[in-house]
Image (cartoon, helix red, strand yellow):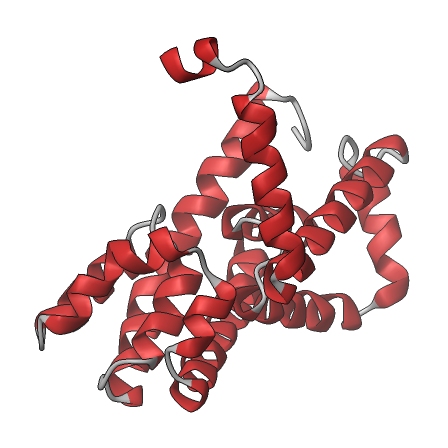
Length: 215
């Protein structure tokens, strides 16, 4: 706070540096453009009543038939590999679009598929991919765990289980270690349900009771 008071333009300089770095990194640029698109789609849905009426939302989805679920699962898988929006919002979208049970199932399938794909891509490309996709601070924060031998698997299982960890990055990070694919797959399949359920339930309650949407 003192630094901001001494230099009132410090925040703007930070925003400028972040924007320059984002434009230089194609992965972060794709994520930024995807986020902007999702925000624009959210505004369009709001203006057309899709965020305030379940009936209107269902009428919008009906023409797509089963393809609506297929496209959503694919979107969830892709957004793990190329993060477009926070994972919690994707989980919320699944519940809103398809209901609590089907939404949970589609979220689970899509996120698990994307997590396995991220691991496989990182295993093929190696650590240089991490430096292309993620900030150095994030890499430094979790890097030390990869040198702790078998303890990394336990740490990964714990972080995948809780809903606040950077799961997308951890999937890529795991792919650059000596962890076996079957061990990683077991962690994802067993640990993801709790995090997905927490995100889905928590954000749904917030949107319904606090914001009055889809109540």
